[in-house]
Length: 153
Image (cartoon, rainbow, N blue to C red):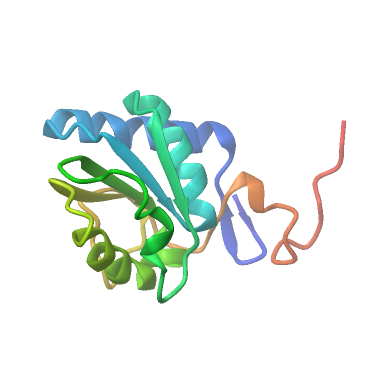
């Protein structure tokens, strides 16, 4: 389904995408200690992904070109495995700065994940589902990019 120039991803499809992503992460043998959600979309992805992976440490960062990593520097990341959940369309430009900032905090490993990777993307996360870009997620229906709000039944 398409609305306002984007394909609508409903909650059921999103849950399936996240489940498949989590299965791929588990199959790779990577077991994150901390999940970081990058950006608005990344926060929701991170929340769902952390449940699937049984990770209780969850952090959210805004998706900006330069991120003040000092905001999370009080957390102990030294020697821990970190998974960054992001939407490449929304937060891809911020990822490099986050990775550089995290390096100073000494995690043992940092990997990245996104539920849908557009065909034309400048970055390729470690874990991803395939997409064609231009999607709308269920929590974005109130935005002006969609012509109308859903009606209550």
